[in-house]
Image (cartoon, rainbow, N blue to C red; front, side, top):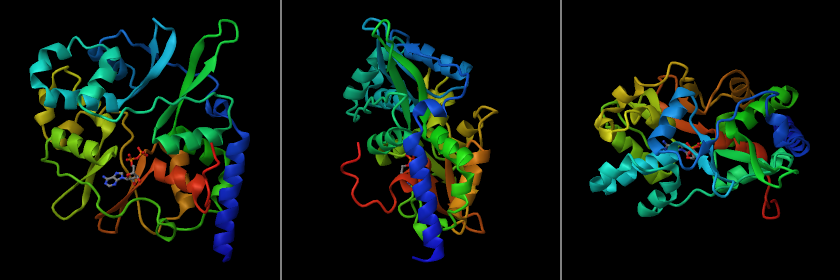
Length: 323
Ligand code: ADP
């Protein structure tokens, strides 16, 4: 092993050990708010609640069974949009749909239901991360059982971003060892990138995300230069009016509707090192990095799941006995 490889391995191993001795509870801030939505709520109301509170997802609660009922995310709204495309005659009914119809909508459009995984908050963080990678869930609810009532309760939700940020903030001495470049370790996706143009319609871009099962589409110009990125969460402000006609609007118009606090686009180069990626995660609310060359031409995409997968699993051959 070269000294570079040795350091890299030592850094990764130390981070993995860290994740095994920390729990999801450790990731939570001392004080936080949690907005939980009742499944009896109308879908269109749930949308305004998300927008009013500047959040993009919320755990669901079935008050009839007093049980946790999954998480509402932008994927659900994308499903509703697909439903509307497939059954335009049902449009008038759409306003009456409640959150508990989401599963029927999923079935009607033939979408693969997202597994409603949850983890216990005092289980090792490492397990929560593996669950995320296995199920491709980008966020996992932490569900505990109240010892007095024996009822389930949703404690919080942890996201890939929060976990990576937690790693970055608490492991600076380990992340500095990660001196290999994005190119060295092949981090991210570099071929068959799905892209769109500013003039494409929002609906076209949504279909592209659904077909490829991805959560972002880089928007490029005629020379493949990166202009912006359309993310699954950008769908939320587009359908805020409750009417889905705005989906014919162009991506360019839709991106103008982004809330002011939206974090923006982060880019990096192929020769950037892993430690600088962790610096970015430490300092900014980054949800993915777009790899560009010196001319700002699109080269690749590094999603948070790519980073998490690398940190947890690179160099590990047999993961079959890992729960
Ligand atoms: P995450 O699961 O972190 O939200 P994505 O769903 O965006 O990430 O990405 C899933 C996988 O698809 C990753 O390996 C990522 O590199 C790749 N990917 C993301 N966006 C695109 C795209 N527009 N074209 C091709 N591949 C992509």
